[in-house]
Length: 320
Length: 259
Picture (tube, rainbow over the protein chains, first blue to last red):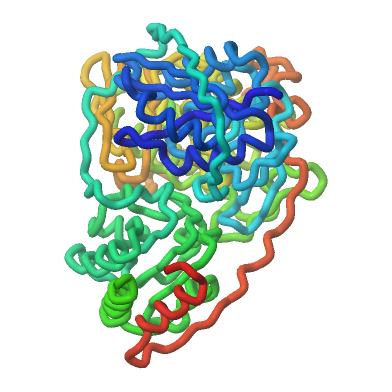
């Protein structure tokens, strides 16, 4: 059975859920092989989980330098692993901004094609994509070479399946070209305790109705009662109430969580394009005509400053 | 400092966008066409760099004849000239082919920096700037919310999940920008008048030395096999808050086993 390479995303020594989704999706295409790229010691704490989710092999490409440069080294290393793996059935990566760039550069190097933001990966390597903000669904395929596919988070339910996780060491030698863009500093602005927007299964977002930066604490409290990520509409990020990285929508992040709660967001096309493929949508807005209610599975017309805190309290109470 | 700004014309996002039923490519005809929104920020970034460092801003567009409208707008904002790769052979090209066309066109221009928007509103792939960097063999400085140019190098603040990364490279380099980078100017009347006489060089694929088999739908590395309009989302229940709105949402979430 052909190998299917899965690029592993991890944080603080733990495999990210998006990677478990990829390992699950990979099984329908062939035999999943995990690829860990990072500083020395990155792979060791991840191997148990990778085995649990069916990785037959774990390619370990570790180097002190690799994190110091943007995108290009990862594409180089993946191209090396594709060579080592023979003819893999596909390369799967999660749809983060960096991984999409890695995937594209990898496909260019391989002379193959890249498909981004797949919501389903079919057995034959073709994919389903949701485009134009969810208005159109397309079936696409790579018609040349090894398919390189980025898969949107929350598209697959991860399920365990034992794998051998045999370690294969990958020699990392960075070319000068791969070292062209040097990361000189990484600055953390957002609070670290909440899940990232791109892979959260529950998201609570605030919009213009929130009114100011201080009031965002109402959104944050609700999010924390659900273990959710905090998002925002463009009106809120443009006003500077919350960082731009929290923007969901046409020019921000596209998300498709299990549950999306829109608070004080009218639902302009710019926002809807980024969230309307969410599984369940709940909206709180004082305007009964707000277009967000056209999408909502459940909506409450009311003042967010009474409805949202009451919901937070209910959720906290029901958790016990 | 000479700057090339990559500009894409896209269907207006407020219109109902479609694919062509005959070949599954983007329908660029039936809806209004506009400059890809984030590209306006790229144009502004290019003009700001020119104003600070002298030099010229060249707009580079790959697209059908109609894209000239978007090029004129970019010129009216303050760019100096444009290169327009317009060739029916390009129709249906994928991201990788498009990057190869852009790379070939860049060979005809002298530049220190290439600036692009981070993402187009039609395909939303966010890969062309990275692909162009790969194709021309230049450093990739993508998703910048701030650009600083100092002598022969550029430093950007690249937006990340949790904040930003400071990334540095020597010039020439390919930079992509997000919309936090600046506030694009509106074309002035004077700018609009001046744009009418600014040069637009139109090139074909053959002019760029590319073979017809390197571009276009028939040679694409990816293919849209079929498409369907997604069924509209079923509107759910909307209730007026009567003092129990929060509790009602909690009940709904419980009924869906979401809590």
